Length: 279
Image 1 (cartoon, rainbow, N blue to C red):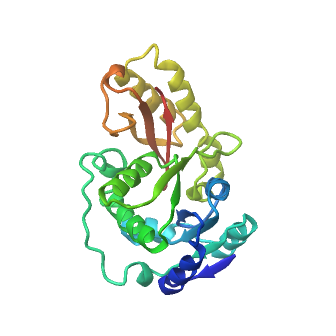
Image 2 (tube, rainbow, N blue to C red):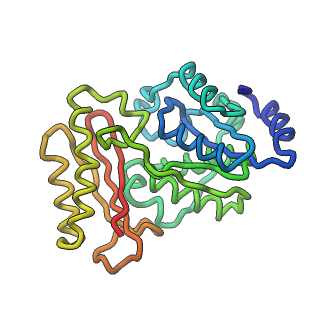
């Protein structure tokens, strides 16, 4: 596995790699787990040359403490990627990604004004800044993102369309621990008691999918909220049932052909997100 830290070296390596080959790209913030590695496996199946980036992007954090506390373990990450057969690892500095302050404001209409967009102001604008920058540096044929970050995936697809970026976006299913907890870099920050309670989130989502035939939208949202909060260890920040295409909340099951249930839950101070397709 080749490792580079500069965009100049990256450009030279990619110019060689792109000769009659497809480039698969997985952008990450490190602290890698099997969810990330499942995307690497998918990229290796579909592409000739696989590139991963590790960059903790400061512009997508609205809370400086969250940025400071974000888990980092670069040596372990490098070994995992090397063992997984990644061809090229890009580990840029902040100066490399943002040689000048990025003042761009992206317009995603109402897609970034709901769910995560309400509770993390500026988050998706920061995501768009770094993804746009990385896509232009790496020039991938296909980029891979996980479905756990359901809203982010939709925003990235919208970014590609708005910016006319010549990259195909492919999604990978949420990878879960043996007890159903969605894999996340933040899971390692949970205390033992929080970790023991966290699987309640996915268990509740599964039960909600079974209840949608008997409960209206508002009632199901209330049931999910109350069920997750029952044990006092977890605190629901939001429960939303949305049109899976537009991300807009629905009031009736007939409002959308595809419906997603999305939640954000605190196991303070750790924040966990998850989602499930209802329809």
